[in-house]
Image (tube, rainbow, N blue to C red):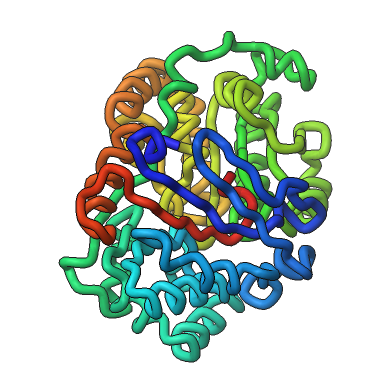
Length: 384
């Protein structure tokens, strides 16, 4: 949206998938000046469980072939998958420059994903795509290192962190509304997670850590907000085994003001990611609301070293120690206010958009035209 406000004509190609049970009903719409085209995915459940196998939006490849020559720049915002390869191939044939932002999906996976990603990179020549991209945009130094390991050269690499839409965070809702709505007492400490309920988010680690913290904070409440992406069964099983059923609140996704109310009413925002996603935007939003975050190194955000929270290893004991340290900090609120102010001054979508705009205009066909036409490619309907 911020790039559209800076004169870019943006079209987003994505699938209609929201999660394993939901699809977007809108195939073609315009939001905030951005044209969005969604292509139906034939196997919604399979795609949610194994995107590399089941995500194959019908008509997307043809649309890319037919329209890519009309744009000045292709921006790919995924790491692996048929849609990314189709975009590179179409851009290659038409001589259109590609900017590639893997958004945390390029690092080596864990478990079964590790050999799969290695095999994928060999079979589908990921290093070749790295070399072809005009610019490679990393969220963090770690992601830049992943690019380098795949053959990127320094002139291609640009590190641009995520940013929050400051317009939502300047004026926050009053504390207490969210707690009242779901039946949590004002004095109860609350640990909040917002995001996909996916195995990579380490929700079992989070629950085990919270069970430990409840020994010293027996009224601790755990709130998980988001669509189920394959981890809900694990959440239910682990919470029962740990005796957390009465302390656990699992809620559907919250948007706009409802999301802010949840951030404001939490005492700690927590993500125990097991796989590198580089940056947790939800954690950055929480910090922008004045709520400290406890994160694993796989999803670290700027500002935690200044009092915005802690980074721990992805281990229940270490994560529990991080949660306890933040909850027991008598200066927690003061530190969080300082980091909130700094986040809203430096880590905003508006500032990031300025950087992107300059970068994209420099590489787009037609040079520095203020009316550059950009085609964005994303895997799921969440881009909207």
